[in-house]
Every structure is written in structure tokens, then in C-alpha cells.
Image (cartoon, rainbow, N blue to C red; front, side, top):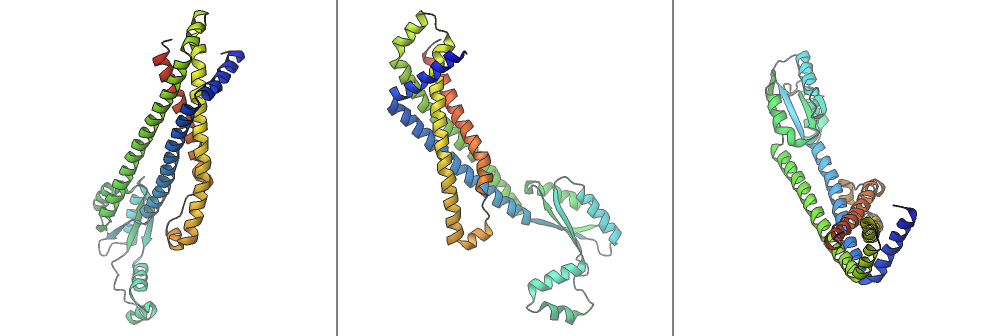
Length: 302
């Protein structure tokens, strides 16, 4: 498209918006509302997933050995475990470390308790590997692998917790896709109505343009530009609103609910919006482009 044609399309696009100001504002408002809900949902999901990942990091699997197993055999088992791609951390806990940890958590005076036992360690056969996984949904298969290793006496894991987290992650993923699809379709519907009205108002003008030789692209382009402008405006405003609201909410929670903020770490705003901002603008532009493209193909018959 030549520069003059592009300039005409942009000029007519803005003129169409002014001409159908009420419907244009309705479309922009709808996109703002939809993308605001999308951004809000995205922020909640990102922070929720961060919290889930933190919980996943605390879900561990313990591997205990056959009585009398040599240290070299234990090290060999550890090497087998560490070769697995799903392993995040694999820490060896000696019998002495296990006894110290147990006494610290159980007795009011752990030092005195350990002194009373002297050199005797009641957990002498409790050396183990403490393992965390990158993805807890793979825990069942990994536990089966551990049980098949020679020299492993017992494997303990939080199967119910892992299954619950996997189910929550799956639900959040499907819910996210569903909400995004619904918002996308609603926005396209509104832009469709706005462009349709613009075409109706200019139908005679369009007929004359076609009679004097205007190309299909030349006729369509102002309406496509109109849709893109509406989508762009409708995507920038919710980003600005969400950015400031996100900071206000974080500061409010940090000030009023210090216990919650210590347990739940929010994602930094800059990190969150470095992804959310371009994605939201891309969605807004896509809504405007595809909504106007579908409408012009349907109603202009060019």
C-alpha cells in the first residue's frame, strides 16, 4: 500500500470512530473491561503458580536404605537418583543429622536429650536421601523407580499433596484458556457490530468508490485501521490501570497482612508486566484486526 493510501486509511479510520463515537466507545469500553479482567486473572494466576511452585519445593521424597548398607552403596544410589531429569534437589541426610533434626523438633532441650543418649543414636538406620522434584505430577512414576533400586528399604512421599497440586495446576490451566477465549469472542462481537454500523453508514460512498475503480484493499483498509485503533486504545488503558492497582494492592497487603506477605511472595510488578503488557497489547490488536477483517469480508463482499 502506498504512503498516500496508508494516510487515507488512517485518516478515515479515525473519522469512522468519530462518526460512530457511541458504538466506538462501547467497543473500547468492552475491550478495556475484557482485557482488565484478563490482566487481573493473569496476575492472580502468575502469583498463584509462584505460590504453588514454592509449595512444590517443600514436597519431598525420602529414600531409606537396607540395614547395614555401606556408604559406597549409598553414594551409588545417590548417583542413580541424580541422573534422573525430574530431580530438582537430592540431599544426603546421615543418621547423625537425622537424630539431630529429630531431637531439635521433638524435645524442649535437645542438647540435654542427645547428651543423655551419649554416643548411642536411636536413629542409626535412618540415613536417607531427601529429594524434591521439578514437577510433582511425576512423583508417582519416580517413586516406582526408587522402589526398584537395589538397597532401598523404604520410600516415603506425599502422594495426596502432589496429586492435589497437579489437579489444581490442570484446573487453573484449563480455566485460563476458557476465560481468554470467552473474552476474545465477546470483544470481537462488539467490534463486529461497530464496524458493521460504519459500513452501513458509508454503503453508498463505498459503492461509488468501487465504481470508480477502488481496489478491495483500499475499501477495506479504513475499517481495519478503525478496528486496530479501537483494539490498541482498549488494550493500553487496562495495562496502565492494572500497573498502578497492582502496586497499591501489594503495598496494602504488605502493610495490613504482614503474616500473609511473609508466607506469600508477590511477583515484582516490572517482572509481571514485562510479559503482561506486550501480551495484552497483542491481544487487543488481534481483536481489532480480526474483528474488523471478519466484518468487512462478510458485509462488503469485496
